[in-house]
Length: 598
Image 1 (tube, rainbow, N blue to C red):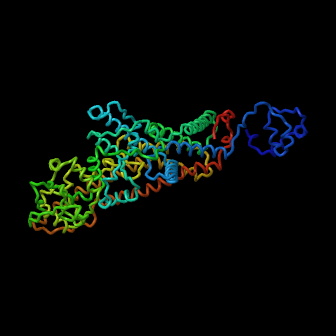
Image 2 (image 1 turned 90 degrees about the horizontal axis):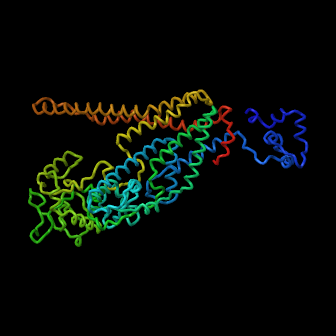
Image 3 (image 1 turned 30 degrees about the vertical axis):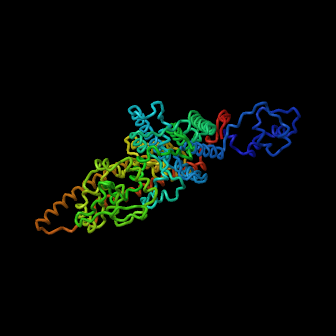
């Protein structure tokens, strides 16, 4: 083995003069040699000899590899297995350079923190399973659905990955959009669409509105390259076989090879989770909502116009029996004014449309556009005033006044507005606080937070596995003592950081909830003492919830910074450690070189 690693000059010096003269003598035309590698090194610059000596019919590959061979094979395996394993959601920006840049960012993230992408894949698989189960359950109980349509896992994945959109060009009015929604839709080219979420799809199915997208249609949008996957699979099998062979033969491995095998295992897990997920879908399937426009209009109003819920109210529509508009304030008996979009394009406080929609409590004007009118006409066709009145709850709008003076004024007005049917009193127009409860997926996101018990457990387990595998190099050779020591510290930190942070965060939250509870009780006692004439204590400028939040941030930020440093060091050291490795690293069984690989 040592003879393979010494220089050609040393080989030539070790040969006897006789053998050297024999090798250097001009060979006959029929000269052959059975072991070409012993002759090749001393004659590598003698082109005449290299042309004259004949080798046997078959020459095995040399059982040696260089640093570049190790670096090249590992790097190509890393990039190939990560790039092909990533099944990202349908992008909002479809230019080729934007898609390439987005995927490059995810490749880099997977290289440094593969457990994040593993968590994302497991989360999407769990959501697809749940969606398929709910759709099939509704299908078995519905009379309006096609009983023969197969709501399979690929269909569920297509919805989860934001592949189903609904055309809302005719009902989406820009002037009255919520600020965050306006930034999303303002630059969107026509026709504007919204992405239906799993929750929104389930709601439509419950109302008898089913979106049928065939498996063939989904496959046409998917760009799965099976030849590419086969080549990557061949490279992965070669890498795994090589590492197993070296381990069985007691040959040393490099840290880079161990790091590569970890990512290969992660890629296999990603393939397993995303086996039914379409790949590289760049254009969504856009559905026409003409048969369920009323329901879609209500969902659009609920999510993208929620800032008007405490200002818009619903009254009985105009009719010949009720030609007089309703009263706005009981105090001065002032009536509202019938509004006609033909006379003005702006609604002001006290204006009421013939359909019964009123701008009841507002200090701002409402610009009325054609999509606004079409949206509300569709809503009233689906939900007449009588149905809305039954669904009403509470006795007035949900006020959120930032100042005490405004709050008192609104509380006085609230007593006179008991008959106003504000949108905030209708459950159908209440915007959920949880993103996953929204009817539409807003914004481009691949990674979501899932509080399912199994997913949380996986999020805690994956970093521990990642750090534990790299910790197996405890007694390996490092270029320096410091690098080896810091490697062990980083691996231990990665193993312990996630579960320790999770436990301490839960403990912190519980502690400050307890302190806040005691503070509220003490504050109630102080109010009772003040009513009895006792001196009132000065209110603290700091809220206990704010103190708890600051404490959590101050604790988590340093831990997060140290965690990032540990992850970056693990990756960099895997490459840098190649500058000092055992001699046996460069020996490779010849039969391994016969397998096709990069």
